[in-house]
Amino acid sequence: MFVLTFKSNKGRLLIALIVVALLISLLMALIFSGIGQGTFAVSSNFRYSTAAETNEDRVAFLKQFDWDVSEDPVEVRQVLIPEDFSGPFENYNNMQKMQGLDLLPYAGVSVKCYTYEIYNFPTDTGDKILANLLVYQGKVIGGDVCSAKLDGFMQGFAPLENRG
Image (cartoon, rainbow, N blue to C red; front, side, top):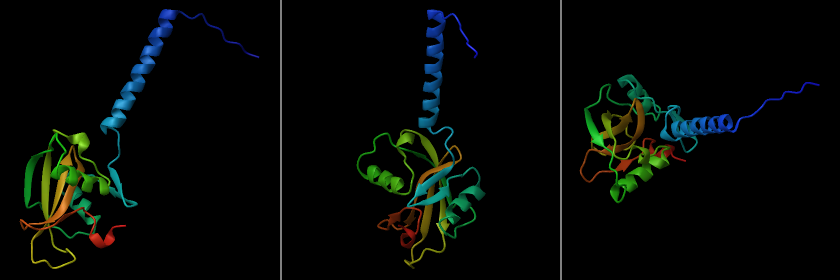
C-alpha cells in the first residue's frame, strides 16, 4: 500500500482554486464565443459545411444545396448586422435559425455579403434569382436565396422541395 501525504497551505490552496476557476471561465468563454467551433451547421438533419474563406469555398457552400451559381460573385459589400433584432430582422434571423444558423452572436458586427446568381432555380419565375452569403472570419453565418424583384420572395439556402 502506498500513501501520499502533503502539507497544505491555505494561501496556496486559494491560489490553485482561483487558477482553476480562471481556466474554466476561459474555456467557457471560448466555447460560447464561437471560437473553436467547427465550420458546420445542421438544418433538418442535413449537416453542411459553412467554410467560406475563398471564392471556391463559397461556391462549394452553395453547391451543397444543389445550386448552380455564377463562378464569381455578382456583388460583394459590407453589411452591418443590427444590434436590434426586432421587426423584419427578427423574422430574417428566425429563417437563419431554421437553417441551423443564428445572427444574434454577431449583433453590431460588420460582415461581408457575397451575392451569387443562381441558374437552376426550380420554377421559372423569369426573375434573376440570387444567393446572399453573410460571411464573418471565413465562415458563412447567414444568408438567403431571393428574387431580385422588389416584391419577390426570400427563403433559406435549401430548395423548398428538399426541406424536411
